[in-house]
Image (tube, rainbow, N blue to C red; front, side):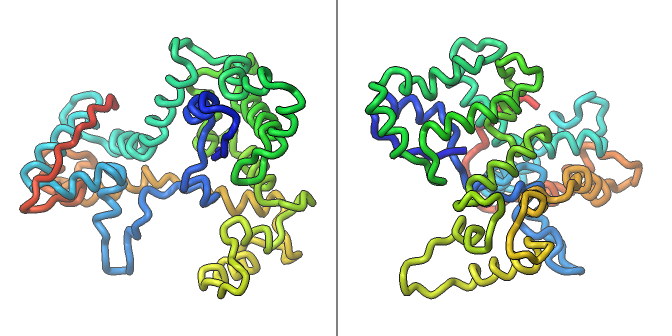
Length: 331
């Protein structure tokens, strides 16, 4: 995604603010995260961190909200969530239903962002957006500006990775083509999700590797040196002492990133770095929660079993009721 400095007109600024995807902290880290929480689940062999379970079950934002509730309010709201998870309303939550809920909570930030950007790009709420419609909204200024002035402006204005408007248009066009699975030059909402969040779509991941290499490979030799790797995350000032974490990243590059020890990361090594091996964390967490809360060991959870172990699923404070949750998502 791109963060752009705009100077053409205030109108252009307003349009692009909603139209061009932005680089967020997750993108900046490069690595496609597939764990359910940044917290350690088992800090050591004997300790179990329930805060991991809270974030996995609720998502990090909702977990923080529950931390401000009393135990009574936590149980009440957990009961409402239970009813959502029990899709077939048979009075039991199976590991499969729980896995579906956990997957949903982890993808909620993507769902929200897709909804926002879909409305911004598709105010008429059509079934699909064509490339020409997207291009006109995001890059239409390139057609309406004096060619000589535009040429100079497009070569000067750059995003955080040094790409000009023309280069960004080219990259967007390529990404659009990959996201457009039926090749009809238009994106449905599902295809549009892959366009703005390629990390969420398996068929987009090869393109993520290519884009990452283009971002970091400053000398365009088709590989990434250790200086380019470090330069993507740290630019020190003259005379500044190198932080310890930078030294650690250099060690990571030598020991783990550059697998053939030739001093560079090639495409396959970059892929191994930013796309970790597949592991179904949601399924593992669902089975863990069922195992710990299933008092009669029948392999599924009743509402009473979940509420009896409410502190495994959600947090609370005994004295601070905090703010009420306001989300009314359809799951």
